[in-house]
Image: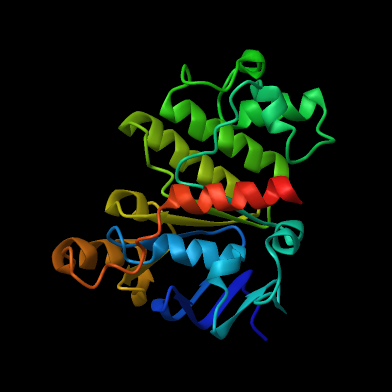
Length: 257
């Protein structure tokens, strides 16, 4: 019996008459950081949307199992309740509210002590809780605040789409360290990235190209192959739907529920 936290078995996804994911198979274990590396347009974000259950990314073939249960047809809500969460490449902006209010959007029963613990986890002072979520926050601060919200959710599996986006090198090291802490507490972590240095910090990695997994192995082996063999290619065009458009679509549906 397979004991993997997440098992993806030969899924294929079509959108707008194009096959954007092709016979994808992978697994994620609890307490492990798993990388998905690939050039822009390789299908990485589409994979994240399929795992999270976005309506336009339901597999036409294959299956997705979570904690041994087939969740291929489950809704986003059901997957979230089961313990899956997705951190977007660009965190959603909630202008006009404080960081405290933002952190309470998910786990609404969080106490002040819980919030302070989450801020400590991401190495930010509790004084930030009264700050507004606005343009005065740096990219690194916004990433850490989103990680604080994930920490409060205590997910079984956290999928992070390009956590290195919009942060400088120092902030990136801090973010990667926080992902390791999240895994050390028992969560499974999947990191989607186009940067080989990010993938190198994972326990295992998969390499994607043109909607396919073309290599699985140690983070070091996948990094070596990526740096020596991978070049931008005409095939990497299966992910042309903008992330912003998908995010707006999901947020709009959430408001109507």
